[in-house]
Image (cartoon, helix red, strand yellow):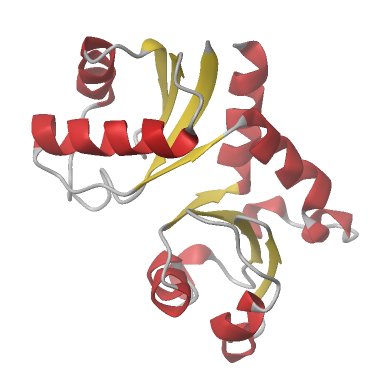
Length: 181
């Protein structure tokens, strides 16, 4: 059995694409996923399956959400190693007196090249900062996520990828949940 973490993008935000987590859990169990566990309403779902391919798991979840709830929901599936890498590779954690409430991680559907940083044109969003690490973009917002244009939509448009962003507290909690499974 392999445990996968599916990060659903854009559900239960401002009354759009509403999906109750208990209904999602029941739906995913009905198609064969085991030990389904959700974390908060923003669409973080752990599933156990014999399927090892993250892409296949993500596609199956995306299809089932559309079939059951009628919502077209992008899904990025990550492993515990992906979350562990967040803690090892986040350059902003090395800063003295860092305010972790301003740290976010954008999980990307594909591995990015270091040259992708130029495509993002992050310099337009100073004093916000970002750093690319494989299929993650570490973000440090100067004021906060709600007051920037450097968001998931911008990242997706500039890099032609699927992206979903989680705050540092959520990333920390998801890693703890992975470790408990």
